[in-house]
Length: 138
Image (cartoon, rainbow, N blue to C red; front, top):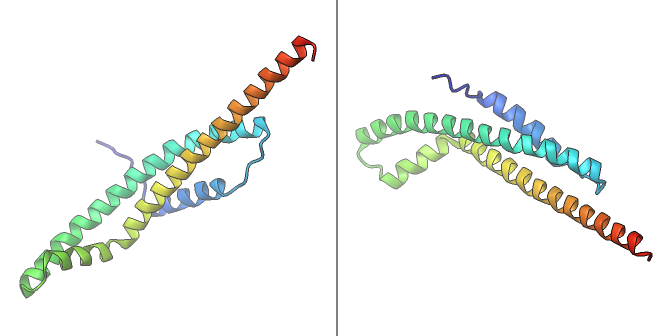
């Protein structure tokens, strides 16, 4: 089965690009909001995939580090499970950072898409009201 998992370097590159887009302030012009919403929907899907890929890399790193750490701790027979977990977490900090960043990018894109929907709904309601006023002679 070919999972087509992005490398950590590819993940960081894409997250940087998506994050740059998320840090752009959008106007309330409906055409721009709709276009941004379309882009955000794609970024939500992509960041979800990057999140899964990041978790894959984290799990692989943790697996490798767990075996090595348990082997070393067994030799010393002094390390507690809490100490072993702390060591493993510190050894996997880069992979955990990617997971955390993917989650943040995904949440940010989701919130921005919700904001875009709200603006579009507001514009629709304003058009509906302005159409009603024109038809009623006001």
